[in-house]
Length: 206
Image 1: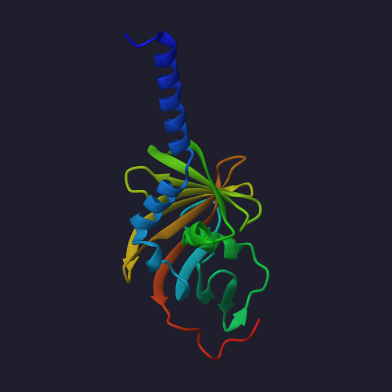
Image 2: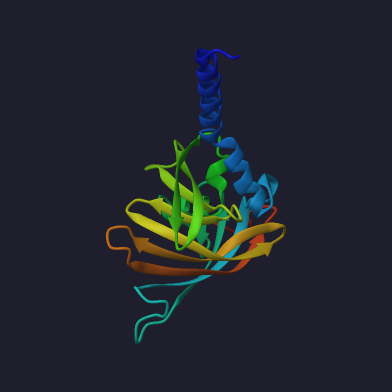
């Protein structure tokens, strides 16, 4: 018969091992990267076309129209609109989150956070800091491992309508909400993406 204290020791060891596994973010990061096509398919230099509007309804307010924009981006920190670089801009970090570039940044410190259920989706969570301030909380749909929600700076983002370009899955639609009242304030859609081998030569130097 196994002594009672030995049984307890074995149980504690198994529990500690399970906790260590569950707190290791690497398997979850790999799931997220694999879901979109793998680390090698992430966007680095690309052209993007968008439509968007500010407001709390999916359609612009009466008399208002959606805005359109064409940009060229180079991860991690360059974004040109009409050939002019935007300079310091928090939206650059939004793009790094949406594209999962932050998950592969060597400066990123990634930790597991509690699961979240949002809009009926059960999600696993990862917090990223070090490469972005303040830290971002990513939530990935457990069924697909695709990014479903991002919490950052008093807002939360919901990502939907996943499409594919050149072996990469990306969320074509994003809605941003205020955490304090859960009301939407920004609607965004990616209408076109083009992966680029190099930056165009006619862009203004930052």
